[in-house]
Structure formats: C-alpha cells, structure tokens
Length: 229
Image (cartoon, one colour):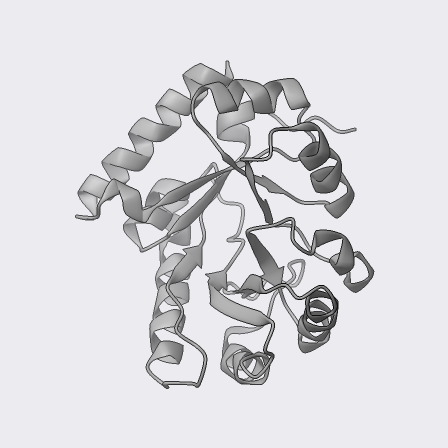
C-alpha cells in the first residue's frame, strides 16, 4: 500500500510543480510517520523516502534509535519546552516554533551541546482559535527577537491550514504565508534570509506547491488513516 500510495503522491507533486513552472527538486516531501509502525516506514524507505516527520518527541527519538542513521527527521508537532533537549542533534528542522519562550529554550539547550537549530516559525495564517502559531501581524517582531540567538537559524515559515473539503479554499492562506515570508525578507533583518515554506498536507499539498511550498507534509496520503497508539 505504501509503495503504491507514494507513486500517486509523487505524480501529484510533479504535476503541481509543472503547473507552477517549478522544478521538482524545489519541493521536499516529508513523509509524516506519526503513529505509524516501523514496518511502514521501512516500506517507504524502499521507495527511497528518507525524510520523515513526527509530532511527538518521544516517538521521534524511539524510531530514530531503531531505524537507519541516514534518515532525516523533522519535528512538525507542537513542541513543549521541557522536551527540547531531547531533540538536540537529532532533527533536521523544527517546524513548530511559535513563541519567544520556546526559542529561548531551544537556544539554551542547543548552546549547551554546541549545536545549531534550524527552525521554522509557525504562523496561524488563518487565525483559527484552535490552532497553535503566531498571528501574522506579530511574526516579524518575534523573528527580529529570535534573529539575535547565535544557535538558531530561522529558515522560513510553517502553517497548518484549515481542514477543508475543497483544497482551493486554502489557496489564499498559502498565498498569504508566502507573501508574509517575502515581506519579512524585504526588511533585511540581520541574520534572517528565509527560503522555506512548510505548508500543505494530504488534502491540499498540490495547491500549496502551486503557491510556493518547499516542504509538504503528507501522512494519510502515504500511510493511510492514522493509527492511535
């Protein structure tokens, strides 16, 4: 199932890139393996998938200990400050930085181990009450404060768009996130040069790619419905 699903996802990514006049290499697929058993991850690996996303620190660390060391892991879920130290040196990206306090904790824990944290700032672009993330209008100020932290590199922005039946309904949100990134880059903030947009999930990643996504986070489209552990 995973192999067949990945072929479908890959075709959709390639077609979305073609429609947007983008190179396929501009978009990185993150296979969201949260709640999925190691066996399913190994099947994805057989299709040359090496980048996986997890929502929970404990699950990410456990899987990383079992699976081959060449895999790259992204923390895509809400991150509690007391869990940050477990991620040091283990993740390629933290997608869900949504406060100065969390950034301070990342700076402290990474500095202690002499590591650099590559992060994305989570923006609640649709301003949903149920979602984590910074409001769009406060994002620049927060980035300015994080920019001075020596052990953090702000690589871009991330959002979790609303759950919608029609993916076109999220096009405006994706477009607005890209515009926010462009606008903040234009301010020429010291140490800030953002190129990454983590946006688009199983239901809407094609639209996200058309609007500039560089990371798409696909779980159900690859592994099937979520398994609760």
